[in-house]
Figure (cartoon, helix red, strand yellow):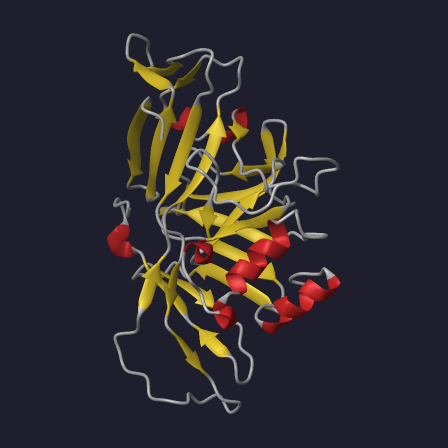
Length: 312
């Protein structure tokens, strides 16, 4: 991270909005009303990093027999792993010298330019440089969803959300932002941009070959040194401060290995969904994909206790 960083936490109890903003090469100017964030060094890029709390928790998996029974008794507590924080990163356009320090302006991401990893592309580049797989740096968007898999939309992506709490009949919506296609300073959330798995944290450790599905997904969707990397088949992607809601269709496990042979990845064949229950105990449930004799992954993120706290 560069040394010129200003950080604020945006917390709003009404709709459980909890985001951390980091401003790179932007300094606070309180002489104006409202205060503004002004570029410190006008000749250098200025960035806004929007940090979300973990969007997913993975729980221990169990082997399910063809009759639906488990091959060994299950006793609690069940092991779980919390994803890292996710971030959306934006660059302040060259002609814009400052950002007003108000909640609506902080959430006006369509006025900014997405800062993405080199392999978060709409399509394979027609000429060099040809990006391979490298971990995104701190000034590039990185959404960890599910656990240890890093996603990013392409440059056409935009985020649609309310800037003020939305209340109907004494009920206030949970604040959320929905991925769509940017059209000027508007977002068409009926369409989705290209989304790729730009990295997997499994590359950082020694993962057994039979557990490397995340590595394969990353390679086959965003390693442009391989032939015909295919984007993920995403049908919905919503981020909240209590966890993500996502729907994608595809094949995993052995199907990924078969996809390598014919340059197709995650073709229609199964559905994988995450989504909020909006229950009283603030749980997130990830609906598992079941198949006889396969590992059944049950994912549940307990997020009520994490509100307002950022894990590092």
